[in-house]
Length: 300
Image (cartoon, rainbow, N blue to C red):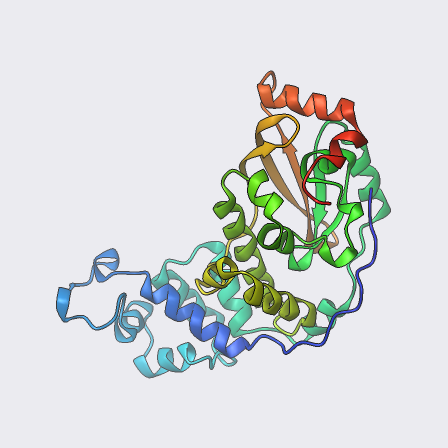
């Protein structure tokens, strides 16, 4: 198990919570059509791609002026009940609803929390090491990879060979070509990473390390800029990843995500193959090759 402290954050301007709130509401409103919510659609006479502000305000049961102020980023005094009504009108998912609440009613104590380095409990490190044959790692804020086991290194690469600041899923996904080859559905992996970073930005807009990461990726990756501009958010939970491993070829692995008690900003991610499948046999081979497998995988 690896667990090394990250270097101090570089100075960076915080994300603008008001601008984030404004753009999030605007993009959620733009994706709805009047027909989606039972309103008449006047076709070519409409001047906006989605719902008008007055239509959204009507659906949410608030005045147009009130909703307009909120969409302009003035959310400090908005009540939870009004946010609930707007979330229902916009048909937000649970993750989007939580993100809206964080943006509108963010707490100042989050700033201090974001400055504290994340540490993985020793017992969790022992748990990782005990998961023989199961690729597993712990990811924290800003998509930082905090700890991992031998099988994760065999599948994804030996992250211990990288500088601490580079052990980050966003940097690996957008800036290292080997990971484009590893993930067959790379676009979906990239979307998942950006959606989670957006969630982090809603919780910790004053985090200088997060701001620096977003700034760096925006400069270096056109794909990141495009996805960041969508303002989409999603909680990582479970699913399937298809990979093309340099040693064992195609892998179909199911993943599960578990939030850690005591630190909800940390999640344990595990991968497994269907019993008896070709992917299960491939994982068995990787386990038998040990460190030799990790040397052939993408991270270095």
